[in-house]
Image 1 (cartoon, one colour):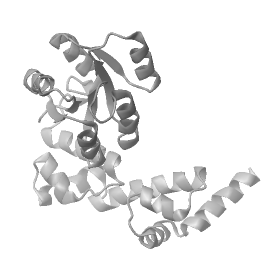
Image 2 (cartoon, one colour):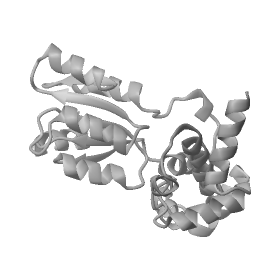
Image 3 (tube, helix red, strand yellow):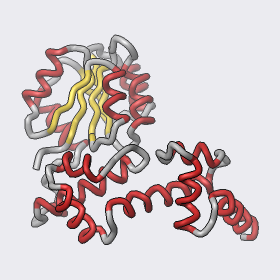
Length: 243
């Protein structure tokens, strides 16, 4: 199975090529500017780490760091710069970067950083686990990260290099639920949290969960929970007041 995915964001082709060549134990994706990077991150993905340069042509790296967090809250982020500046490092960490890489960098030092920030092999829980089980774990992780995006079983099977029918059967065996029910369960769980903690209109919650039609969301929510979203929110609010 291929290594974890790392997205390198740098306008220098030479830098992108160095990462692609030197770290073949990972799946290296590259983007030459902020727009390309965000386009990649907004699609269903399983990127573990984003390495971004501070000096970008369309958006500086610290601004991009903030946008990356919005697009993919789960991935780790390392900020990279050729400018030795404590202020930049402090600001990057304040914006929740996980690491700071200074150019010119040593390949082995960066490799150590990658090992620290990704979940690449060597994990005790991975020992003795079959390749298929690893892929099912990866499938579940992909769904958890992308349940509010357009992610189909067909696209997931291609991502994992498994046949559609095989993935459908094995996923249900290992997860106890079909792909669609698993994804729906994550959406409903997220919807409940949003209804409890926010005063967002139901339509906004529907869009946040990936529904283009709020009515479809409301019908599905009632089918699963027995309540409309508004009824559920009212019920939770009343219970909270009675505690």
